[in-house]
Length: 322
Length: 297
Image (cartoon, rainbow over all chains, first blue to last red; front, top):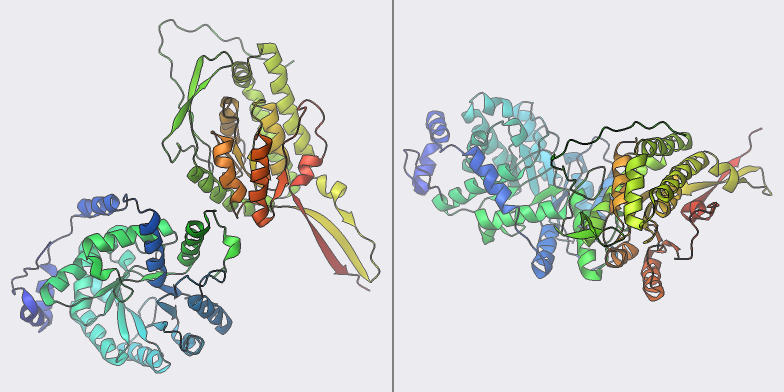
């Protein structure tokens, strides 16, 4: 386990100090220990060989369903599609009422009101992307307004994107200020910060961006928008889980992690759960602290669930398309 | 008579390069997920090869591969499917010697008898290839209806077909169950003869090199009794041929399992593989779509 020693001292006071000026923030982020790329990939590959069967598998499948942010982020989204998605979020398997509900439905800001209405009384959160998703290329004023609109329409969670251009050119202070501004605009809503790891190039950058987002007040750090390939991968999520674990070591705070994009099978989802348990710890095996951004994953989880319950292999014909 | 080259005799003392026999799933040649293999002997009990012994999870993967291939294969033009089947016959012709030797070893036949079986198998592919673009004319219809409509009934592929291939006839029987299933646009998961799988493995290699898209035919070597129940109860399989099940009670159980999602079931029966096959296997795996189209003025 890495205890962060950045020259400013560990512990809550030390971390509070690193954000006091852009210079100190930069020194802290650049002083983070580098990620051993080969080691991280090997670790992720080793963890994904674990065999999860029978009762453990049944538990994992239900947990994974409860961790899903059922997502639709297409230009062609209509209120009708969002309504269908919300119905699925409430009752994922029409043939089996024991299947748990998902954690949240994730939509564009203009569809938040529709989703909010459809999910009333269900306890399922509405998440909205904001801040000029997915590129994040507009002025801060527009991003703040985008966030306020989403929250005003009833979003319980806000998924913001960071300005990757600013991050990659080393303007960490600007990214930090942007996240704090959105944090403020989001009010009580849960703030998830999308790092878009597919554009950050190195694991070192992923670690820096994770710390930057956590220091700026993120409740969750999220891998990707789903619009860039590669989206979530196991090693990237491993690096983020380590960051979350180390942040907890230093501050006692629990920050959530959300891999999004490219997770389509139960097998993949279970690999992530194993990694969460082994890296961040069992505290994180909770929809409050770990989510999957996905839509097609749900059907595969339901098919596996049906297989466990009936003993027969199921097929996609028996589940809704989205 | 086809021209065949006379091969020079082998250099003495050269080590054989032995083939690893594997499954054929989704256009690739994986080993069994279970890691199992079993010994295949020739008709006299002499060691022939180690074949992969497929498990239920290989069957599951094969169904996924077949389902994935279904959209592309079933929407190809019938003419193109006919060409692809004819290509299978062409590539088999090029491997005639290999097939003959394998059939002779598997079934304990003389090489000339085996040759005639391989000839018949190749001819069967050509015969079914010809049916690809004639099926709709023969089993489809234009229906007279009491209204201002054209009304057509068209045959369409049913989906993923599980084929438990015959146990005795290792190539002609195998061909006679695969070809009618795929010619109309279905995709197939084949469980080969348990004791005589080698010609089927070679047929997989032929498929891989003859324009058949990956996943259209998936070949699993192993026990039909072991894998059959998983395929029969699989909700994403649309039809099953129980040809390779020899015990009538077992066949009945599989048929009952297949009823869960109303699979089309072909019961095991006495077959004369040399006889003209007729249309029954072709039409077994078809659905009929009827279209009403208003007549214009």
